[in-house]
Length: 503
Image 1 (cartoon, helix red, strand yellow):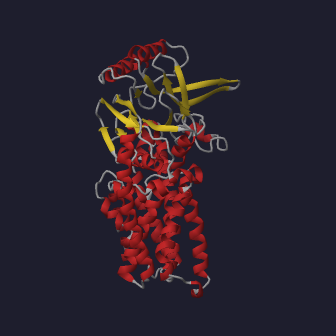
Image 2: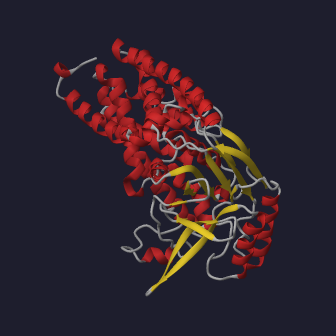
Image 3: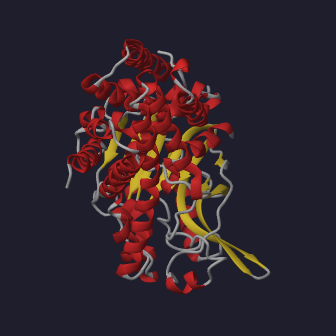
């Protein structure tokens, strides 16, 4: 193994360790530096190899749990689960591969190096967020999650702005170490980080004042910790409901309150006239609470039926007040990509769900205002939270089933990404997870209460109802495509010659 390859693998390890669960976030501030130094003087072919090596290793370190999930819960053979993971890793590696080629070129254009390279990184993350349905799991900006003072910039430019700052810092450090360097780019980098710090402090103070001034709502998140392997057994349905009833009652009788249960915690098709439907409605009425819960649903059509992963809302009188269907489904978990064009896939993955997507902007409306529901991994897509707030949501709810992930790093990363949605939209969040991690999150992205993995219990609290829309919501989300097109234009200009070089 050569020095350059070792440097690429070192960067992959540093960035993996910087992401949530490992508690080594500071490594992300310089994690890309070894790779960047290895790219100095590299040919386009060498750069592509180094970027691809980094991408494969870093993606494996973050997404290693996927093959186990597919094999165990999708009932796919080991070889097919491994193949699906390998294909995903290869796709994820394309983006750092392209970035590495661009950076190798930019080393010869020092005046363009820091900010063009940073914009290219964020622009490629934007493509990754939508290409082939998108998979923006753990973008670079998420390394800042522990430092809430820097997370506050997300209400300006989302996690993309954070990623721009982190990428630029790595590029600036690499340029300082290796040169040649330009003072203007480094001064701008220092000013950007100082600005982010002081802005973050001001916004934390602002959130504190807003929380005191705006109306509040009593909420409760319930975590049943029901075993994933047995929860769909018909014999356990009654016991499952009893467990959630008992946990919900633990909060006492503070009224009114919104109670949130996890994704598909009601393990049957609700709304089809089963006796359990009446039990749920009677419970909401007797306890005088508004109840949100997840349950699958289907709607008949002439040639069969459409199946949905659905969130339901019951009123404090026991009536059905609304429903929201999951709009961004999990590939090979809730549907089979390309099944229409490759029918043989249906036989290979016959145990995978066949759900239909709902609309992305659906909300439900309890007594205090509209609530935007994000089901499971919809939380990793900033545009879905934005669509909920655009539809009038004053509170966000995330119901999820992270039992799929076991005790891997995935549940911790899943929760971390949700805290950024709170800041981007400046909305409080209630999160109810089957087996953890459930949480109550304030509009500054701070977790004010949580239940850990494997715990059984409930969280009660009071959250603020803030109705104004953030700058990010209005137009800050445009930073993603802006970085992509700006990087493309700057790379093109840099390639035209030094007479266009500016610092």
